[in-house]
Amino acid sequence: MNPDDKQSPKHIPVSRMKIGIITVICWACALFLYLFYQDEAKMMISGFTRVGLLMSALWIAFPTYNREAAWAGISLKTAYAWGLILLAIILRVPFRFIAIGLVVWWGLHTITKPFFDALKSEEKNE
Image (cartoon, rainbow, N blue to C red):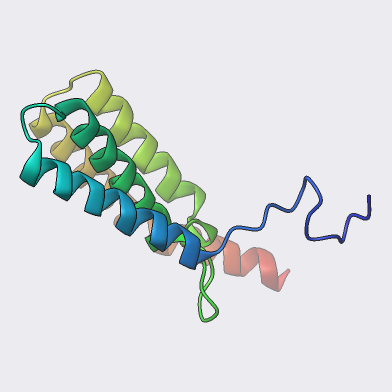
């Protein structure tokens, strides 16, 4: 199989339009079931709602002709911060500690950024 072939296992053709259509169908099914079969179809309503929410997020993050994918520009620092936040939520750390930690991290980052930028510029000049 040719690696440049669009149907090869490494290239899965997925379009933003198809994701949008699946999203609308999931939300429409959830709304229909909620309006007409609220008591009988609670599990189906929650399933369609969750899949619709996930597909909505994927549709927003998917690349378009004018911009890259939403995950393409994430720095390592941002990923690390979100990982710590998710870990704190999973471990059920009280919100005030998360907020204090973020403020301290942001403050230290803001204070030390000029110092590290100066070091980087000196290394480039050498």
